[in-house]
Structure formats: structure tokens, C-alpha cells
Length: 112
Image (cartoon, helix red, strand yellow):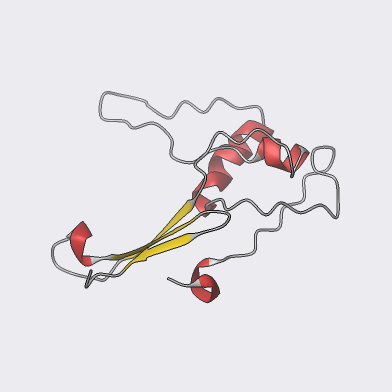
């Protein structure tokens, strides 16, 4: 749940969108990659095909690729990491979580 295990370097190259050599220090999640690809390809983000469908999770990183310091980010201010243990029955209260913002990290271990 600490920096060494939850901080994943994300390197993206998008010609004509992102300027090479730039960096963004905003925490984002890997779940944001698919919405970013949809946005960059100019596709629709509609994923609900029937009444059992759900909206797409994640947010496009395109604005941050275009302007890493001032791009308008529609996603959350922090990235959530969950450490799940294999069990016969899933119980969210028995898992460990880390919420990382730009300046802070909150960790809740399964033992409270």
C-alpha cells in the first residue's frame, strides 16, 4: 500500500497530442487508459448496450497529455489502490486500501 508497490510509472507517446519530454505529476489510475484510447481515437464512450450494462469507469487523460500542468482533469483528485485477498466470499471490510492524492496518502489496512 506504500509508494514502492502502488506507484506505477505511466509513459505515453501520442504524436501530435503530447509534446515529448513533458511530465505530469497528477495521480491517475490505470483504469483511465481505456477511456483515454477511446477519446484519442474519436470513438464514443457509450458502453451500455442493454439494461444490464454499466457506464465506463475511468476518465480520459487526453487533456493532461495536451497540457500536463494545466489540463482540465475530469477525474478524481486521487488514485485508489485496493489489495484484495482470495476468499470464498468477498468482504470489502476485510481488504486493504490506499488513497493517494498529490500531497497525501491514506491507508486503511484490513485490520483497521
